[in-house]
Length: 268
Image (tube, rainbow, N blue to C red):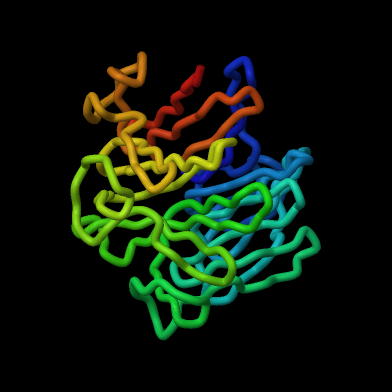
């Protein structure tokens, strides 16, 4: 039921946009209709941008929904708005950037179809799924490669200096930790950078959040198994993490898609 909802600091939920039925209608609040989407992101002024099929929709602070940008034959997945106002996004075969004025730049397009080939933009191949993450200086873009599906491993790829490189994951599955290029992720849904340059990786079908730093991957949440259990991360359980975000106090919020819950993690 496509809606964008807001949860206040005192846990009050309200609807920002959408009436719960799929469609494409601009308007205010629940008078608008949104398509089926996975990701949204907000700018410094509180405007929300939604990767809505082949549109980027904008919801302003007064709940007015408009089309910010329209694509032809390109269907979006991840979206990330930066403090500069630049909007980064991807479809399955390309990564793009929009300025706040609506100027489009394609940063990478998978060469000759999709595949799993690292290298310079123009020869690299990929097939992307899920969210997108961007470093604070906008020099590094992290995406999730789905070329090998959920039965043969997902990968985290980095676009930097016009080059695409695999930084975590392999072709094949395992649920262990260790060298980042020897860890097999089952379905990477999104990633989240911390202030130290470490990368949290939501491994949806394994019910885990992994942490990548200095070429090593460790299990951050999920060592106790898949489920719905609150508590310390050594015993806590999550189910199909799909969406990670920080608040201004450094708390992490985890969307648990299969159980329709948002969990809050306080990091000491």
